[in-house]
Length: 488
Image (cartoon, rainbow, N blue to C red; front, side, top):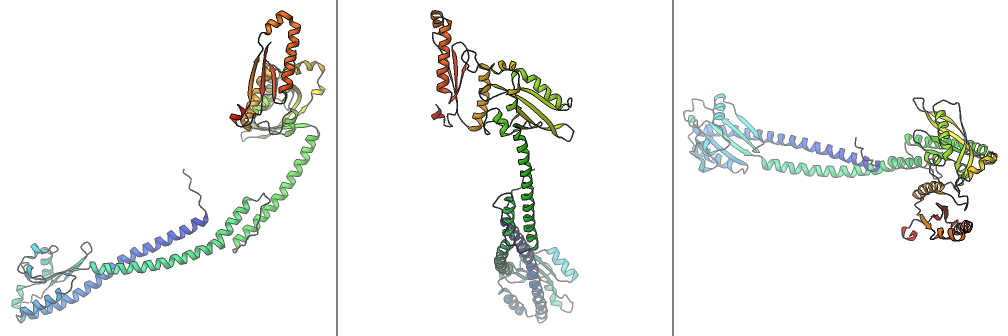
């Protein structure tokens, strides 16, 4: 499901108010526009019906007096109205006897008048009832008005209907323009009032809410400040509640810090390093003392399970992992192991490792283990001493290939974390076999020891020196900075 964009109330509230107001104004305009059209059409229809009623009596009386000129004068008078498109007097055969345009006379209305209907003509005469229709498609009013066909007016049978078509486009256009102008004025005044309302709403509601939100964000920082002017009861209650939460948080934090200090004092006083392992994610937290026992600074190791496992001595690794797994599988009541971990300088130290499950998941499986390590190298018997030197060459006392591989792994992790470049230098002594054969093995060993001493003295502060074979040395140079050109 797509996420909706997060908008500030400073934009959202005014936008909603203006769009709602615009919708109401547009709806009212459409409604009044339709009502106005109907009212104007009805008003004009009533006026036309009155004029036709008068014209009917004029025509009938003129026919009775056989005063046809009077009828022509009345039709000519009607023609002065520019909106009168068609005004004709028809006989029973739809023949035009009188018209507002002379060219139409003595013509059949069906042939010359587009909107005329002979069938509707006959229906109106048969019912002797006027018919008026407002045609909004043509923007006109059509009228069929019967003349009195009383037999006492024998001449009146020559004409029987008045048909007209009146243009209402101009009337509607002027009315709509007036309506639009009025609505623009109303919308403008309303927009100004709404703008003023939004400004007042911003200062009375939205601005205090924004300040309270910012204060809540800084609840745990020294920048927390609730000196905010609130004008409503709800905002005052929210401000007071934030102050209460701040007080509770400060008290809880102080109690937590006090408890942590007491706990750390007890643990550090025993010179123990602490580890906290989340089994599900593999994340491991190790304390500064844990790193210090292995010779590392607080920033030099990642919080990852592999950091601990990779430092286990090869001879102890299987037994340690098996013991830990048996404890996690609930086969032992507690976890405790004495094993060796690799120190930063390549040697191995003996530690006492203890742990306890402190959290389980919803299925009852172990989720989190907390434990401590203690350096017990001084308590291990003397027969373990040779194991500590297994990582070093006996002749030169330089680290060997296995320890170098472990150091390369640690350096890779450290370099990725800090962005520092390092270098690996390979040194192979030429003609060393010739020296051994010509001068003897003893002088060859003394030469190797001399070379190892010089390499260690020169590069000990910048990296590590290892011996891979009889005449092969490796220099692992560290901390060349994060500029590749400078490192090269």
